[in-house]
Image (cartoon, one colour):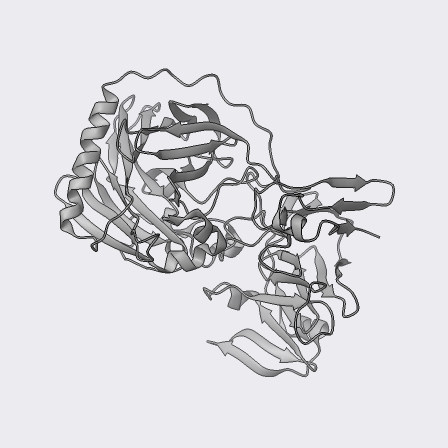
Length: 529
């Protein structure tokens, strides 16, 4: 399967302030823009959506159940028009409708979640909004969203009526301006966090489940790292049988906020409240019939759950001559073996913020050249990303891994295995081995053991991926390549020709791209034996 080159946008919301929101056919936000500023950090994908979402939570003594309201992970009906977008669904006795609209003249947008209790007893709910942020020029964000995220300063302002207001200011000047955005809840917010590492948690690399959604209260801590994700928790609402409630969040954007955020910025929240009251008094045409869309393997992927390995199993796979052994509280984390091999275990990957990765390149030259193939492998199941020839920025075949926590799972080269349990996406393995010219992933559970190896050639610009099923099977593999063929995802893609007879795919860059203009005869080949 090849990644889509052009996002299927079905709604374009615009207002007179130059605020623009593009919505994909899968019910995800593609981009929030103000002129040349990209507000969100990662463009939404037609395969799996984006990082932003709203979550309806039902709270009880037994715990918290939550459901996403946007994108392919949501279950329900999605309607889109240029006047507004709605997501409708049902969750555990709760009918819900989520609506996105823009203010008439301000650079402000509103998420309204209307909930009805269809049960015969009282229920307690709240809603959590999570919005990824770039708030920088689109070219800067797309070149390195982690870098631009590090410059975003998050400040909390507490208002007596609106509760916690989350201000985020880009400290890296954008043509001399400092873009800024405030998120708030008109019904009052009681909890917040600021970074995706707080929201998802390190264990989500294996589980795929955000850890913050299971917490009764968000941590109310400011963490400024590489995945800016301002997140607000509404006040809890107790709903009698048959009752309804409405919770509205807003985002208010300022193209230039020269001073640091402070308590005076509460005026933006009050302005947003006035804008919403004016918006609510106007009738809008309801969006058309539910928007049809094609399903994707990445809608709600189930991750393969690897087991931790005993010492005997590790010695069988990697030998016994270990050195520089790393342990923490008697848990084995990593070791070196052989001449130049390094092994990192699942236990270490799930406690470190920086994901384990390995950069490989072909050839014997001391310095890279136009004939050098380079590829990055990530332990959590990205078997090849940013596969390039020559220039590593402009000459990509495969996309870059945009999420250090493996939140977005369609980048690069991914593998699903199809067994009697259904389709499972390979994620964090039991062990990951790195060497000068290759990497290997060892997956093992009680029924299956498989080794996947990536190697680059020292003779030519070629890399090779092999899969060995050592125990279990037979299994079917679904190998997915997210194609760029140039500089950025969603740029124009040149001709892709599938040769079914010999199992080969030939890919050429678009003639107008930097790669196509500089190397008009360049081509990539994906093939199997």
